[in-house]
Length: 286
Ligand SMILES: [Zn+2]
Image 1: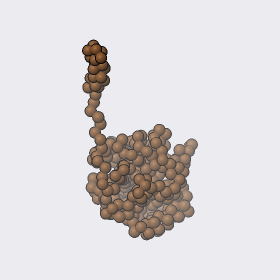
Image 2: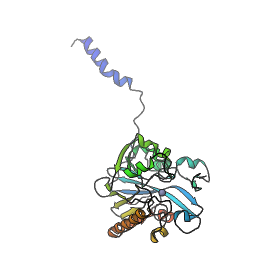
Image 3: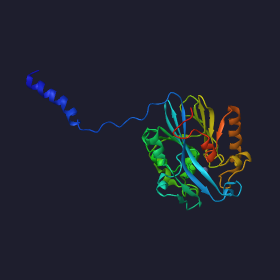
Image 4: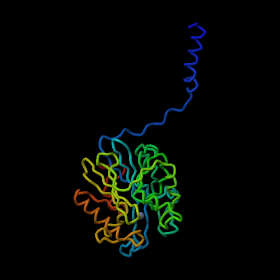
């Protein structure tokens, strides 16, 4: 090669690196995957209920929690339920939900909880929903790049026209472009039995619960809204707005049998005591 051609070749090789010399540093990767499965329990908002008889419980006022969960598995990160809409955090004292009269409050937005774990929404591989009510799907649209794990019946029901009265489709509109993993039954998310989703329909048509097997803490069952309170679970009481009363009762029985067989700890997602009994975020169970 002549010197001239050699110089041109050298220039062409160097050109791309010179042109990209000013580019921004690559995004910081999320934290290293943990060795064992970890469960983080998050307070994703509070719901002030004026009269619990609306939920089939005793007629009294109560505050329920909308808990959501981050599961960090060696092979990926899953968020279970997305709580109450983060924008409500901007209003101190919360806002009264027009249709239900429930006062919703968010002290710490989900995005902030994730930041405490050095995670951005884009680091979340899977977002899974027990069901699509406003206090479970409130921040669904934070996760447009995650794979959404939904029961097929739930999505069909929740996206019907007109939408069911308990559903606000704009809260989870990103399902249209997100990667979807639609379930017709049970699913073992990472293929090792550590993170399983089981159908528990009745509260809504495609309602599902989460079963976790942790190395030290053993098996936990996270309820979704198979019941809202311990009392409703004990007395097998079904909220009048559940889509199918008989199916709700059958799901309770099936889940109870699973809990008994596995010797599992049962976490009722809306019970403040159950959240308080778990390690205080950002501490975790493993
Ligand atoms: Zn619900």
